[in-house]
Amino acid sequence: VEEPVPADYQKPKARYDWYQNGEKITVTIYAKCKSVSTEHLIIDRKKRDLRATLFLDDHVYTVHFDLFEEVTGECGEGIKVIAGPVHRVIFVLNKKNPDIKWVSLGKALEGNNTMIQRIDKEPTFRPCKVTTCQPLTHDIKLFGLELPSGCHMCLPTGYHVHLRVNVDGNDITRPYTAVPPSLLPPSYHGAETSGRIIHLMIKMYPDGQLTQQLSRLDVGDTVDASDYEGTFVESRLQRIDRLTLVAAGTGFTPMARLLDWCFGQQKQKPKHIKLIFFNKTEGDIPWRDDLTRLAETRHHNLEVVHVLSEPDQRWAGPRGRIRQELVEEFFWSPAQHPNETFLTCICGPTPFTQLAYKLSKAYGYANEMIHVFAA
Ligand code: NAD
Image 1 (cartoon, rainbow, N blue to C red):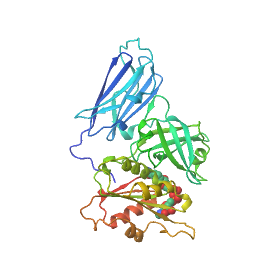
Image 2: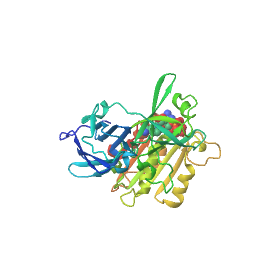
Image 3: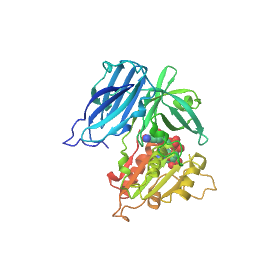
Image 4: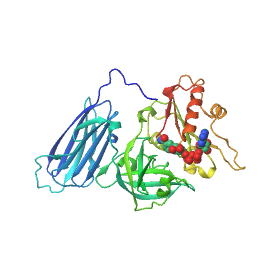
């Protein structure tokens, strides 16, 4: 559902500045926008070519330079945001030659100091190195992808990147939502916030053009990953009494980061969390043991319900696909908890998502109580 633009909407404004201090170059972007966090800045530096892309609402501000001199190391280490009426996003570059005094930041390149609409931005792809490749089920693998040196990108919760692979001379891209490396501690907010690594849970389909290529990827190989995209606003998880995660198959991927966020919070986390997870068979459920452990031992406010559409005879749990009867049995009823705040997140194959949305509405969930993940 497209949000109407409020009458008082003001296009975000931004500008940049820089200064040097001995061996360091500090770049500051001043952004006038509702909210900004370190996740909003992507840095891509290849030798002297530096591109800093700041995502502000539905706009993108770019700083793009052929730097005055070479720099070393990762730009990302120093990203800092100082919030205020004008937010300051600060990152630091380390001079390769500390003795040289820079007279400018360098030569401005294409797109420098411009603010454009997000939809008009051409995606930037960067070659990422596969650092881990771990089977989670018979057809799902968990990949750890390391961003190239000089690149910094933290994926916001529930966001996805596109992977690009060349098949017979044609580029094919598909979206994949980032997951944490594990559901169990101590992973919470660890590697994902370093801005250096992305974890993706990918199902290999026997006839999938791209997944056939991805299934051959191994540690040390590279694959191109785009900028992130998404619409989920993390602060929606705050002050929620009952959070329901309705996932089918790999539609679990955004839910994994949502759970990770909830488990990492001390305060303001949802009081009750229920994951209703639809899969074909028991063998298709990724991270099943971890989910069981979390529900049984560590996190008493998490309840997990598995629903299988093609179970074997031994399966004693709920069966079939999403339908009214299952919603009435497993969804919390807003009518029974009139004074509580609800959020229901839905993700899976499109027909599943559409039906889950329709059934949730029919069960009394208002629009603002539902978030649908659609890549
Ligand atoms: P799958 O084929 O293994 O099916 C899993 C379950 O989905 C089934 O057991 C069934 O309960 C349900 N289901 C499947 N088709 C249905 C239908 N037509 N109507 C009602 N229920 C149905 O699922 P998969 O192969 O893991 O596919 C997951 C899907 O989730 C993919 O289409 C993927 O694109 C999507 N996905 C979207 C996002 C996103 O938008 N951010 C993220 C991850 C995955």
